[in-house]
Length: 343
Image 1 (cartoon, rainbow, N blue to C red):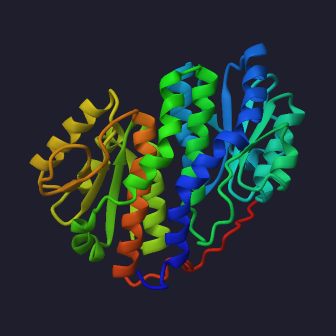
Image 2: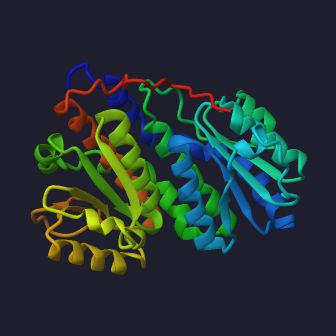
Image 3: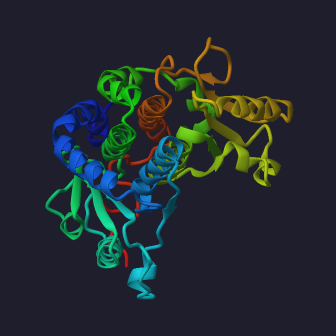
């Protein structure tokens, strides 16, 4: 690896240590948050985020609905900033997710939610940020400075924080143990090699990224990063949603990157993969199992949600190589800046 992409490479190398630091930084605020949620359980959780942080919120939606049975909805920040419409959020949980904590619309939405009586929590990297100040509880992801414009380390740290939140809230020993093993597994995941896909994807103009359950958030993040870092048009779909129209795109020249879950949703996912192969799709599947053409290596399954986080780390490592092959400036994607302020 040359200096090209050195910032992102360094960020990825630091992700396991960031996740390891979280145990200490999140311990007290998680205790506080979960104690308050136990005293007054919410009927709904509302998330608010942009970009990669929105994908971390998608991961939180999966975890909270899957393990706690509480519906999770994504807020539209412009309801607060443009339309000035209060939402009926009294006694509900409002979860804001941001790397920088400086986007004006997220800050305004959090302030409006707090004024409406919601319990507000910020999942942020900068605990001194305006978003952190706007919320009652701050959950630091402890990622430290991120060098690359495109978020990678902070995404990994954010979804790891969501896993810790769900483990604590659901009192799940299995998820808690998975959090403890996660830093070491991330180091292993970064060593997996997806280079067999470099040739076809270097020349690709567009692709689909597919996930389901815990990997849907990873598929959405993968599609965003392929656009940001590789200037490769990519769209993300759930495995179920892909059958409702987008499957018409399938051909031998349209790559499909399928990120297989390792939980109960894997069965339906495998059925779709088999169907796509019958239709002649150019299919790349990241899944456990023996090496064969079109199968990308993953870690052996342990806990499904932690497995999905490790899959993101493997994808990011591959992303660096693909961007170099496509001649992209990895650390300075065109038209992008590190902190995006929207209203």
